[in-house]
Image (cartoon, rainbow, N blue to C red; front, side, top):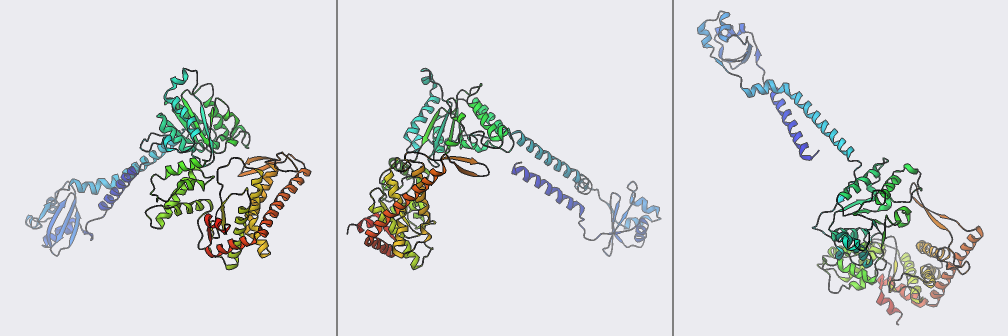
Amino acid sequence: MKPLSKNIILAIITVLLVSAIFSSVSLNTTKPEEISLAKLSEEIENGLVASTTVEGSDVLVKLKDSTEQKARKDASVSLESALSDYGLASENIRAANISIKDRGARSYFLGVILPSLLPLFLLIIIFWFMIRQMQGVNNRAMSFGMSGAREIKDTKQKVTFKDVAGSKEAKEELQEVVEFLKNPKKFSDLGAKLPKGVLMMGRPGTGKTLMARAIAGEAGVPFFHMSGSEFVEMFVGVGASRVRDLFTRAKKSAPCIVFVDEIDAVGRQRGTGLGGGHDEREQTLNQILVEMDGFDPNIGVIVIAATNRPDVLDPALLRPGRFDRRVILDLPDINEREEILNLHAKNKPFNAEVNLRRVAERTPGFSGADLMNLLNEAAIRAARFDRKQINQEDVLDSIEKVLLGPERKSFVMNKEEKKITAYHEAGHALVAKMLPNADPVHKVSIIARGSAGGYTLKLPTEDRRLHKRAEFIDDMAVMLGGFVAEKETFGDVTTGASDDLRKCTHIARELVMRYGMSEELGPQVFGESQEMVFLGREIHEQRNYSEKTAETIDQEVKNLVSSAMETARDIIKKEKNYLDTIANILLEKETIEKDDFEAIFAW
């Protein structure tokens, strides 16, 4: 029920209650004394009555001492006749100043009709309200199996491919779909058929939903948007009903586009749960498969779906005739990152010193959403310092904030912990500087950020898709540089290296079991990961190797980690003077930027 209807009902009930109270409460605070006509005639004969008012069968008497009394008579007999029957003389009757007052319609309504009708009115309102509620429940029950897909019609905030930076190949693929919808004859003359479905795959934040909005803006055809989770309900069959309703609506608006976001919510591989064929998610998936390519083809309806988990999708979804095209939206390279930064910088006042190319160089691995968040954090930082423009410092600080978290300046370390942290980070930086395959050091700091007490920021000079074994080996040595620096300087180690040890061990195990980079075991892959989705997300490894091989794997991992530690130890011992210099500067300034760090080795 709408809020306006509720307000009207409340107002009516309030008015009726006030009227009932008004009609039931007498205006006079003192109730007049009830007397008989015999006593009234006696008072008139004695000259005690000042005035008499007749109102229906009620006789209101006012004595000369201002006392009020009330008597009752037969409504069919006049007061004069009634008093005459008591032997009262005409002169005395005239002295009583009798006046007759007709009862008005308003007072009759308030005094007689309203009190009797008020309960009836209240019952009618209560029944009407209950019926409306029951109708609302019935309407919701009837619409329970409807899709609820939203049709995008707003052109005020229209998004096109011009508003999507990077992803050139993806835009070309999707541009063909848009052109097919605009001019189908151009393709049908050559025997080409309209693609049934387009599956957009990519990591979170790479712009899959934004690309779908751009398709809606470019196509100029009806665009229905729905999330995969909106199909799934507790009751079996509801999801399938919503799929049928969605495609029924889409066929009426053909040619059109149906966009299903996060399709992995309903498109997971069948047969992995405990529900069998009666599982609601499987019922919904079966209906999607039938609607996309069944006996009743949906001509002119293109289904575009987005997911960041293509590995869990059912094979029946991925075959030709269902999702004919697969568009991959990968993380942007350096040129695409610069385009994305320029796009999001249009409505922000940047200082002339801001170099977005340099920002793009320092953000490898950032998605489009990360870059948008980066510039937003830079704007927030500039506003916090009451600046009218965003400078380079704001942007560079925001990179570290997105990567590591905000600075914890309130986190105070004692002198001993501060010294240990300085040598720890100096060990990372020194080993990274001396190894040829390690990424260059951009910044070293002992200011706490997020959960880290200090950090060494290493960034590659260019984007790389392939990584060599030598790069992994050097990265492992860099990770252990802090651990070795602590042990060589103080003769003991702390828990500050726990995350470094975990990452180093993980890389060593990946080299042996996944990448085939073990000299002892050779180019083999060991173990297969299987995802089990039941009461949470668990990943189990299926062992396809013997216990003897497992011992060899463990020994190889140990050898790789030990070799990396020896490499780091040799550098720390050989370049002890540089280690002390870096640590002392960190203790004094807390932060060393790239240029200052390079200047240390130019002495």
